Length: 272
Image 1 (spheres, rainbow, N blue to C red):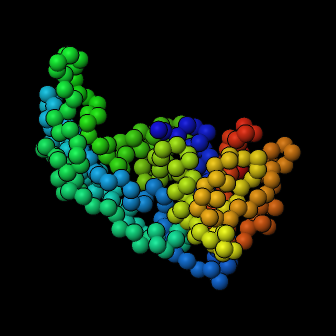
Image 2: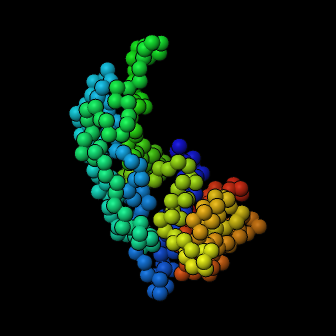
Image 3: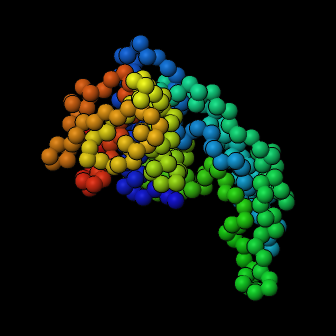
């Protein structure tokens, strides 16, 4: 499921500017120096397979160039996934940074009849109902999709860059800057698991900061992961209290979630 525009804006606020804010505070708190991950979109995918979307057993002609391009894209994404430098790398949990990307046979083979992923290698059957007449397997739903979603990420980047008059090579966003998740709830949970050490019920561990009234899943995901919750309410006009938020930051604060447009307030937070 793709993130809707509001959720994408929310995650953009939550991930990019706010990790910078907390990383500055962390630099000042020398007593708590830990090493952290590059960017959420650069972490290895948890999907068990890497699938070439080209179906070599369908009735449509296959393209060696397309297969080569797909394999090259996946290699490029996996190379990016191994990066552990940058601002976010100073904040991520060491056990997450030490994870090795999952490898399977599809990393080495991306064409032919592939049996390693328990897929239907022959595609959907048209008989006995002739439901695919004429036969068309353009969607190739019998195959696992590529876990790196590079084609989708490029489309999202091109759409966003066109709106602001930029390109990927001229200040715009690139696929490595984009995370595609199963709704915003998955992204929120992954952010907390990657950056926050559990232990709130034992009086230790990290914390997130939220600005109620706001999206309820921030608190739910924090509780599930045993992470502390710091709150700085919005003003009666549903604006952020920036000085109060900065003052409330502690060495335990690892993520600050700012929802824009607000849920349930519907108020947008200006970039400035």
